[in-house]
Length: 334
Image (tube, rainbow, N blue to C red):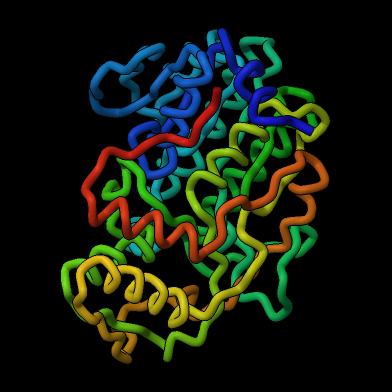
C-alpha cells in the first residue's frame, strides 16, 4: 500500500491534467500535486492565474479538440469538471448532459486515438445510489438515480468503466459522500459544502435552519482525506475499472453535525447560534431526504485508504480556518 512518501515520488516529474482545477476539490488537489513535483495541466474554460509547475489550458471540455491535446500529453487525468448542482441539472437537462456526459465520451475517443494507456480518476458522487433502504451502502449496490444530475453522473462514470474494460484507458471512479472543509474553491458553487455554509452562518451569529427535523443521516468526509483518496487512485496499480466509495463510513444525523459546527463557532465568538426547524422549500428534490452511510472497505482493501480526520477534528479545523480568515494550507506531501 502507498505511503505519503510513495505518493510524492509517484507523481514527481509526471504530467497530470486536472479539469475543474479551480473548484472546491480541484484547487486543493492542485496544491497537493504541485507540492509533489508533478507538471500540471490546469484545464479551465476561463483564464486562471499561473501557478508553480503548472500550465494553464483554456478549453471548453464539451468540445472534442481539447481532449486530443490532453490525451497526448497527460499521464494521469483527474476529471472533476462538470455541473455540480442537482437543481441546475433539473432546470436545464440538456446543458447538464453536455457538461457532464459529453466530456468523458470525448476523453475516451481521444485516448483511443492517442494509443496511450492513461489513468483517469473520475469524481463521481454517492448520490447516484439514490434512496437506499440498507446502510451502509457498498459499491455492489446498483445505483438507482432519482435526479437528472445523478443520472448524468452515473452515465459519465459508466462510459469510463466501459472504456477501461475495453482496454482503452485505466479508469477509476470515486463516489464521494458529503465533502467538507476549507478550500480556495469553497465558494465556487453555492449548492455544495453544507457544513461549510453552516460554519459561516454560525460565525456570523446567524441562526441555522434545519430541514426534515435534521434526522436524516449523512456521511461527512474531510476534504484532505478526499484529496488523498484521489492521489492514491491516480497511481495505485491493479484498480483500473473499479469504483470506490469515499466517505467516513459513519452516518451522522444532520442536526448533530450542524450543532457541532455551531458549538465550535460559539467557542470562537462567544455567541450562541441556534438551530431552528424549517419547512422544506417547495422545489426541494427528494434526494435531500435520503439516509446515507458509505461502506468504505473496498477502498481500504485496494489502496490502504481510510479517513484520518474525525468529524469533530475536521469541523474544528474548518471553523478555525473561517474564523481566522487565513490562507488554505494544502495537505502535505514531502
